[in-house]
Length: 94
Image (cartoon, rainbow, N blue to C red; front, top):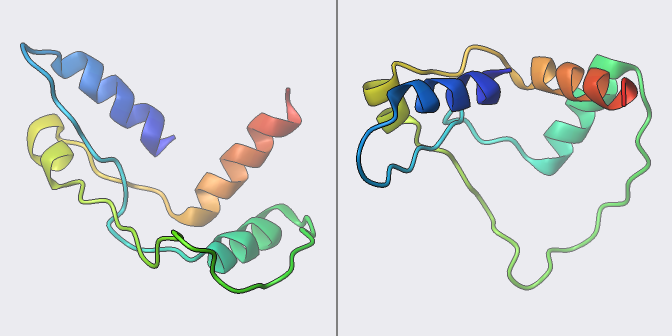
């Protein structure tokens, strides 16, 4: 929902030129944290195996949404659990 609201805010803001916005919370989430949040939120068990990093894997990645906050008046309102719940609900309805 946060991402969809960010896209709508960007469309409403349309102006000349190219504008790039990051939509995110600014907080990092590991793959394992995301997997556990998905399992806990949706009562679904996801099989996984922990292995070493592959060449080229990014160690950390954070979204700086300050431009979206400043220009679009947008900020993330929901946590990772809400994102997992919404994504699973959408997938189940397809």
